[in-house]
Figure 1 (cartoon, helix red, strand yellow):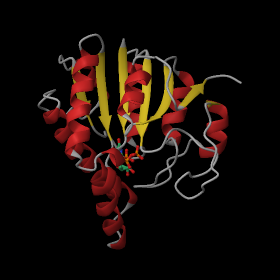
Figure 2 (tube, helix red, strand yellow; figure 1 turned 90 degrees about the vertical axis):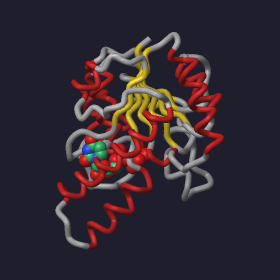
Figure 3 (tube, protein in one colour; figure 1 turned 180 degrees about the horizontal axis):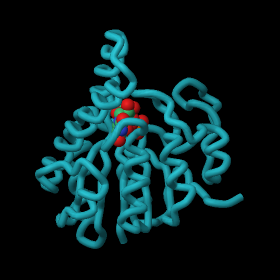
Length: 221
Ligand code: UTP
């Protein structure tokens, strides 16, 4: 299988034990499958964007700063995984990298790394796009704010578009799935799931298309 992982920047919290296990898991899966990992900007991106906004930088400039943060995180992950040394700047570049594990960050302003992952999945004709985040999947409301938030085990793209729209909000903004990513996903064919990337056993099951806890995104209904 060709699998793309959108690895949320919130998963990068400098936890040595987590990344040692993550590395072992990715190495094992990459023996059988080709893995592309698109890394988000996380804390670094948010801090820089917050300060840049205070200094009145334009939205495009803030996105550019966010992109640098995603590439810094991507470099960290690619070195940890002993994957590609140079970080591809476009999805076309990523498609042409020969290594079994390919790691990249953002590309251009106007969307998040979710959209980069959706576009890459389309380009490489992926079987599966796994969006790995720091909660268990997609909820009816923010699970970090509301204790009674309900996890969707399945949700249609149209319903998600109703909830999140297809527009890019603004630099550093966090929604369940970025609008531009939904737009690309709607016209594509690969399976899409959202899972908690902190729970590695579950992430592994999701990557292997086994039973997992999370949200499966359906194209119709
Ligand atoms: P992300 O939004 O992808 O990082 O990029 P994140 O916050 O870690 O992602 P999630 O929510 O966990 O998935 C950080 C910022 O970088 C800019 C945007 O401003 C984005 O909010 N960016 C990133 C781009 O403009 N283009 C890209 O291709 C990627």
